[in-house]
Image (tube, rainbow, N blue to C red; front, side, top):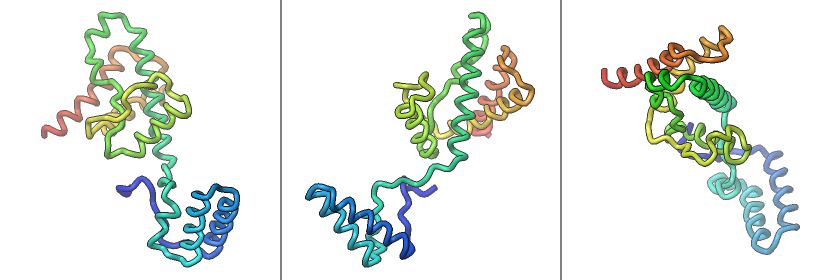
Length: 187
């Protein structure tokens, strides 16, 4: 992924340019004076093929979020739903015996920007994963995605055997995977 949130095309075919010009002409005709001026500039940029000014035409478009990012977030959220449901059903003594804090969802760090923006959109705009509404979704740790991927390896093993609820030892397996990250960084 580039450091930008969006990617500006370096070249646009003649047909695509003509389609964009026509759309800008329509929007210019129905817009107010300020919008008309903006669209007229965009039309000129597209007509003359000023590729260096394409950012002024495409300044509101973001880079596409790959389906793999959405699927990974979906898997992480399903895993956390199962973990949290299992923890709620544990007796207090079992909860106290486990390092449950290490399992908490931490959000997504700067290096996984697409994950953060996609998760924020799902929670704030699509009203999905309501348990995270109002929570900080930006992690301040650089290894949160590594943590989730280690946990997902355990989750997928449990999914393959159709395990619906996790026992204390199952949860400990998740914790052990998280703890290996600390050991790996110390090595």
